[in-house]
Image (tube, each protein chain N blue to C red):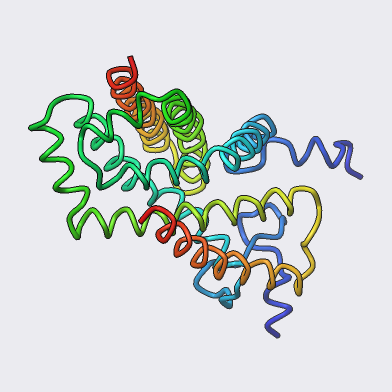
Amino acid sequence: MRYLTPRKRAEGRGAAHHGAEHHWAMTVSSVGLAFLVPLWLYIFGSALGGTREAVLETFARPLPAILTALVLVVGMRHFAMGATTMIEDYARGTNRKLLIIFVIALSWVIAATGLFALARMAL
Amino acid sequence: MADAKRDAPVAGSGGRPLSPHLQIYRWQVPMLTSILTRITGQALMAGVLLAVWWLLAAATSDAYFATANAVATSWFGDLVFTGSLWAVWYHYLAGLRHLYYDAGKGLDIPTAEKLGWAVIIGSVVLTVITILLVQ
């Protein structure tokens, strides 16, 4: 006879040992990105291939600037969390920790760089 | 015989059933499209890096922009951005499918097969439409 409930026996068994909050955060950011990305693709794609003056003019406008900032922050957070899940599936021990630290740091560096560029163009 | 082998508890699993290893799994559309979601999500970083570098160069100086823009609009830039565009539309549609699955819908095999094809075909169609729109 088993004295543990099925839930007790299942908890902490996955590759990450936890995950409900992580899954919910991915759900929230994916819904956000579903609204942000199509319009951003149009704005970025239209700006690409233009002169520097045209690019500066585009990203100085409120909508392209705010949209790009949101795509960078929400998108890089979504990437960091998604990549973390992947690493948890394939890597173990110290390697896992180092890889997770690397992708989180990389995603912040990219977001910060993009925000700096935006601030310089928009302000 | 094959079924008996599949259902047998695996040594070291504590009697829990384990997924069969990727190499002995028959390829199918829902599986392929699920794996591609992960791959496109990671591969998108190539497009993000190029886009952010290009924005940084535009914000910095004429000379820096000339360099980054030459790369971004070269055949290499076209390759990265077109590939990333498909990857983002693929990841987008697969993500919507994930939300639908999470709601407990579309999990029966015929629907899952159809959704898989919808993601593959839809991503190509949306990529072409986007390229035409931003010309």
